[in-house]
Image (cartoon, rainbow, N blue to C red; front, top):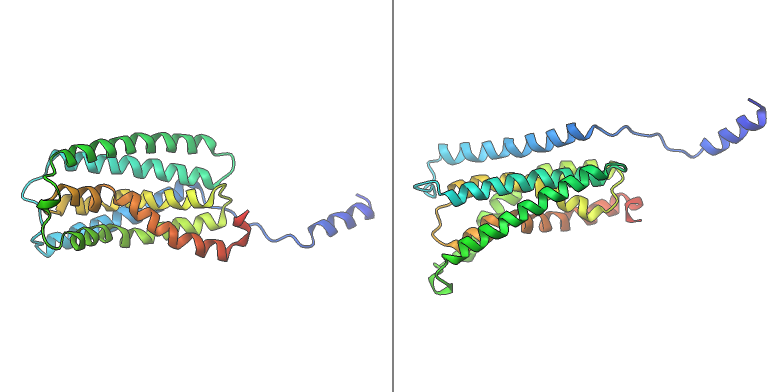
Length: 225
């Protein structure tokens, strides 16, 4: 190697920043899932130990379908979000998008089935809005922790669409953390269950993403492109 070549290499490498190795996608997925499931277990244990009066007298089949649809939504959203953060993982992104589409179809079907049995606005009990909001927050607040972990990973990766990656990264833990509310809420209104539980993974992800996205763009200006 000539002196001129060595000088050129040194000149090109002068301002390069050290490269940090990204963790494996399987490890990131496992950590997000473990965090979310650990929080689910903690919520269920607290409800059982506190002998909550909101326990349902029986487990309905529609609740089982809701939990299954949310679990599928969580798996698809996590696959999509992880694939969107790393170039060359388009197949993983497409697989995640397919699972999300199937899960959303199931959510829409469950929503229509619930609302078909809804007697109307006149049947709403006093304090309905506050109770619905509280049930949604019961999933959104704990989901912020695994969503924050994913956002930290996304900030070190190279997401093609930052907003979409963060949105689906928030949907994933929310799809799991709705389970305690679905299992335990005995509020007697179908609209409450649609807005306060069934649609919480989508509505809650919009809230979490609207908080995380500006912070991420401010801390990592290179992601704005």
